View 1 (cartoon, rainbow, N blue to C red):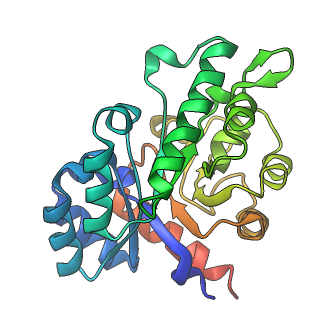
View 2 (tube, rainbow, N blue to C red):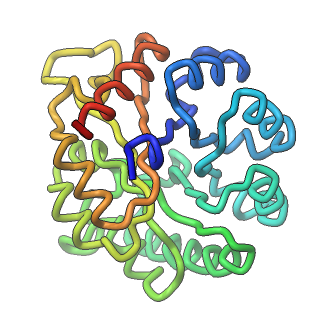
Length: 255
């Protein structure tokens, strides 16, 4: 299976282009075949589907807010069906909850596990996407992310590994990915600039131009069960160039 068969791009990367048609023009022009939509796209799923079709693109997956999962799960499931999405990820807890004590993270894990059970009945896999704040110890040495997964154990909850955020959380990404290989279903492919560089981009880099060894990490993620590998850059200076550069590098790892 080639890189292009499993590669997607998170449209959040291109959000500064604003217009969805322009975003999809850039995405298709760069050579991508799949995109990961943002939560707001689920609110206009029919329109997004039509635009994807017109650009010969497909949705690999989508992010969805915790609020939407709680308040309108049926509408979320309907939107997934419209977009032919079977992989759904909750990308972050609200800012005010990111310093929750251990019990808050345990409760979130139970809630997400229960939600995953419901979405599984709709043919949709629900997962969690990490940042770095979940790597803070909350119960002795146990981190918030460990508490989430412990409470959700036995449920269908999956994990979209954001590898670069693991690194920024000061943990070994390979160890964590291998430890939770049973639930890994996707990975965010992003890179970190060398110290002191790309400060206007919050220290992120185009994939292949930073400090992460994506030749190794790609295979680690795939071996752990990642079905989709999703390019992302949280604050690119030139989104179109980032999309092109990242894809060119990832195609080169097949050589």
